Image (cartoon, rainbow over all chains, first blue to last red; front, side, top):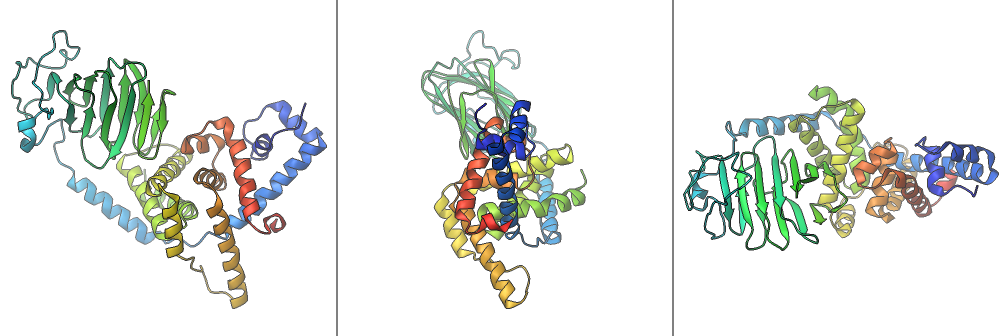
Length: 242
Length: 163
């Protein structure tokens, strides 16, 4: 067996999961045993150096501040946060950048929605769903528990960006010719060829993203979980290439 | 989850971690408090170790978001010089301050990922927890950590003799 790599040596030192034969080798091979000893010395030196950067931490004031912020946040929560749009935004209910509203026959969301006539204006406070609509984007409010985003007809090579923003809504923007729908806690798009941009309020507790029936993301801005290797996480976004 | 007990248990370590990560005491406190706020606000529940890992992971991402550009970190570090913890004899105080500045300067030479992995490891996290927090594969943590340690050691004069 050749000598162990530095990574394996420190993994053995730290008690991480390492193959049994590597552990035996580290004990039997003088070169690796010395490397293990060096790694232990290095760890002690680093520990000692880092301990110098420690300082006393005042807990009580911080605790009071966080408790006050938490109380304020809870007090300011709206009593009713079901899917709804403010009346001021009703004129553009679907916000749908100028597109005509149309119902798509055989829409998979018919199960969740009532009948809505073509071109109908919907009272956003009375309705919690909308048929497929053609436009440039859709914008919906996010319920307390989070939101599910579904994309369909995504072609190979499509780039989908999931961005965390401060605006307290969810928005899907896709190429011209895309269709959108929503129901409480979910928004869907049948996308035309071209990039897709999904903007989500950064404090949303749970976001799930399903693409062509595959769940590719679940989590939040602070605890994202990529379920598919097609995604690359950056500081405030995840970029998927399908 | 008990607010007081959870706060008292995790906040000091979280602040120290963020302080080493950012080089800025005020920002470190902000990040640690924000992490705890989100913990309670989102109603995160779990074992003590699970909660600790969640908090450190959240803080790591908050710090990343805050310092997207390393230059900004450098600027803040220069604007926030280290303050001594307690008064000792002038000689001892000076020695301690020098050693601390060297440790901090050595941390500064590391890349963001090296710094995160090193600090998570020396905050007591498992390789799996480190991997989840900094978005790398668990089986690459050893290699990345070994590299980060060597870089830190090289940047830290006399670290080899300290043990």
